[in-house]
Length: 297
Image (cartoon, rainbow, N blue to C red; front, top):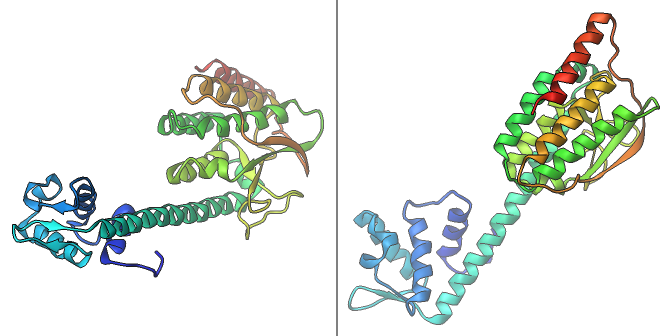
């Protein structure tokens, strides 16, 4: 919060709006001041729903705090504030709300950076053995269940699908890159950030830099606004990548969020090798798993 506070209300407004009230009656304090604006500046605690469920001590705390905020105690026990006082309190609450949003945005940025650092730090070899089509399908199912109807989910997942299908169809041994703005993830909210980045690993993807260098300091492998994602080498066969891309697109088509893929797919500079199949049994298992995934609704 800014140091330019005019009354105790600014502190309480910020604490309540950020979900950490400093007093059990603080939420009712905000409601009382809001109601005062609609009642000509008058607060009658005994008749206000916000204060009805509070203890006598809680109502007394509200009364004392309202006086500290500029309300005047009337002979009939009510409290009254001038228009100037109410305007000031409304201004302080609006300032507190803006600060809460700003602080939440900063915290979400830090969360995304930490998540991307963790994804970048995983070696290609470790990432390649960390997932299967079954785990990828389960991770996608859980993600969609958590964010059914979330506007940020569709463009994000369709971007993943576009990367997988492009890499599957590539005729060169070069990794393709999905470049998306950080905002595409941040706009989904805190829980979206917490779950979207780990989902990338479950889908066999990794965060990287332009030339394949991991940017652990920046936490995104590109610049302050961009995330670069590639398919981890030796994780999927071409058939598995194509099947997973189709499955993601089919699941997205059944969701209410719609939308187009976010970001763009470019050709990178890192070499890429699909997962090698060492035997006929591995080939058959891969083919059956990809076919089953394509058939899974």
